[in-house]
Image (cartoon, rainbow, N blue to C red; front, side, top):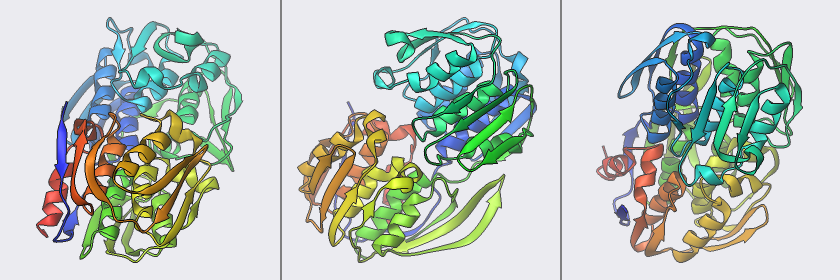
Length: 431
């Protein structure tokens, strides 16, 4: 079991970095390239473990994929280029791979089996398998297809008009992907708008996508055409350094080329509402995705309330937002975030238990947490529990603690940010 030691950053964080490519977009670039016709090239790919799981699975489905660091070439042969895998499809720790691939496999005329690690085995899949079965796919697994291992026998499917109970890009994406190979029109209506990378990228691949408020629909029978995809920096990864610069004294950093998709940029709203000293500049659009450079420095922060439609736009950033809140004046309330309970860990319980060990004044609620600040944090031994975002949030807290923070299972951070600790050192050296 790996352990990382994080020490107080006495010198502040200064300099410029580029965070790894967006995880959500990297997954989709490979998957959509695999079902597209022609050669797709990807730049800025995130070579983290989750995205490598996606490449591994689609290779087993007969797709030729070359990957060298951040460059990927996918030889797509269209939907019918996928073949029945002779091996089980192992998704590792990747929920995105599991759920989106289910949408693709649901319409393929062969049998496949999906398995993942212990964490994936606990994550609910009925939210995807139920609507896919409604469309006509035969899917089974533990507890009637709610948990992996999952067995899929795809075939002829019909479009549905689906009312999703959760605002989830993974649920929406799986159904839309199945809809592209189903009879008629498939639509998904959400309770709130979830991230829209699938819609944007499908359009880039030549698919006609209709958007109407909280409803997205596609017509069956559409094909994807190969593309050159440039992946922007992952705002979920940038969030850790945005928070670090705001709370570590004598800091001033710039993060270049960050994805600023409005369905993902809730962390920017939170930092602004809390009073962070931050500027967003050089805004541009690359491959249908807005990107920008962000400069942020040590800030005087105030507690706020975070909930409602903002939650789907920052669900993955809540662990590090909790760290931010420990240094804000007054009370920060996070609500409407029940979805945190079914992430890589129950992130409500995990954030509260581990930050409490560091001396934070934080308590769990049924749908979030309440944090009182500002608090002086102390060193302690904590654990990521195998959750990359918990691990990085604890590392950020370690930069301001009185005493060292020992993070057990720190190897989980490689899932989305393999060079995370290198970037901390780089900024501590003021480069």
